[in-house]
Image (cartoon, rainbow, N blue to C red):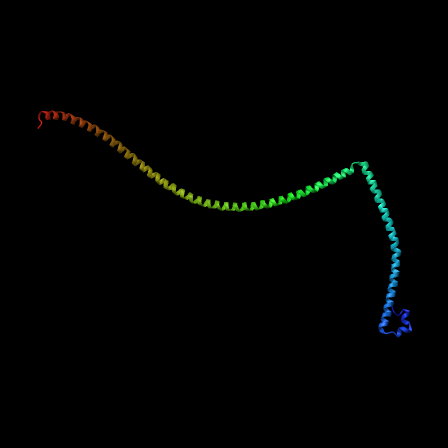
Length: 216
């Protein structure tokens, strides 16, 4: 690459030191680089400037088209609905209200989620309570079994007591009959005693008369 440059064939080049030769080669390289860069820049200039002009024209035509399209759309909207602007404003207001309602609904949903979590906690507590109630029912059932056994035993004892009560009733009935007979005997004795008293009084009359005549 450096051998083709005429400066490397100059008589002064051979008398230079290695550092100076390196500087000459660097100068040759930079010169060639800048020449190539200048040539490439010129090529890009030949491409970029027309492209910039074309893009500028396209941009202007685009703005022109957008302006006319906007104007035509405005004319069409006025022809379709003269109150479209007010309707669009009302629509924007409605959209704002809808956004607020959505925000409110979001807050309500958050509260609902919190309430559901609270309900889940309450349900967990209810499950624990139901478990405790089940344990209590099991204890009550065991106690009821014991009570049933005791009642069965009491029924057996009650049967024995009923037999004893029947025997006592029979004895009481017999005693009642004996008391009735005793009452009848007492009534007969009372009658006999009355008769004896009457006889004694009858006997006392002659004795009083005899005592009157014979005081000794």
